[in-house]
Image (cartoon, one colour):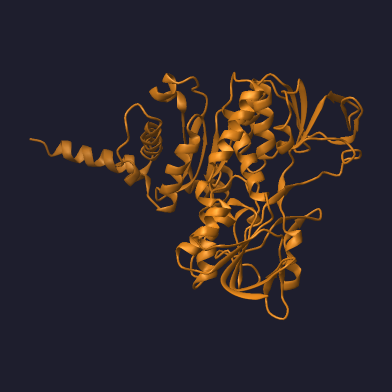
Length: 463
């Protein structure tokens, strides 16, 4: 049976459900196609990482209870029953694009045609080509949370956001944890000093880091044995696979409509889109993890409204891939948005200014249990923010304030006038603006020279 919709969403993510809810609220006729349980699994992973980062002295059973409790209240407005009641045609089947006779989404039982299509598929963990890995009972974040007790020791493979947060959380809970990755830097997309800071956080928690490490083979009998290229042998009763996730684009049959994902070593890493989030096919748009990127699973959902709006209406809305905020669920949190200092200096040269203030400068931080971390801004010559990296308590809240300033193109001169509550983490904003102004007005700059000449002239006019 062929049904005509305003939009068909190939989902599997929270972003897909958000798009469906937004479309039906605007009066559109929309179908949401997703496999049963897929979104719930992704939500559980997200909750698990946040809960692990927040746990301190509570036991493993209490942590599992907290995760289940949070699952029951997560995204109540995006439940399938609620979406169906609001008017969304929910199809709990896997689907793919079919170009003939007309472009449509086909499932095992239905053929759904629409004027626009939105791709919001989930992601899956990359399985590295390591001899013996497939044959072992390795764990992922999903299955790890099902263990009856905290493992005594664990080896975590990967340097994804999940791997970093998971390794630190396990070590803080008392598990002897080793993080192994082939990369020489833990956060390859960040400034080297930022990566070094996060590496120090993990080591301070008790994580043993094995960077630039190649694995020869993995064995399992009563426990795991990981043979390294240098001949060393790592042993632990638990092995957790937390390598970088890639968007699950294979089942969508994209090649049939002329859309070819970007690949690295044969693995799809991103779906090529323009600044309107349109693919090579003018009627197919994308959002969520399908856009790829190192922070694909940790970015915000601002792309949803833009992609859906372009699919439903005229495609004039544009999206900036640079200004996607991301969060690393470590302790303390690490959030970033926009350009790093390295990229800003490459693109803007000396016109880019880097200002940084430690959280120890805030009284609010001293009232808490941790003053570790700092807030770094990259500022253009006109005073507009080009990027920010925040590592410290409350980073997940502050990054949204910075994101608002970037999206609204608010220069620091105006941000300085925004009132902030005393004894709050927001007090770091005027401190950063003040540090930026100090650099602009230091001796030898034209502003300082002009001001001093002005004051000298005024003094000479006194009677």
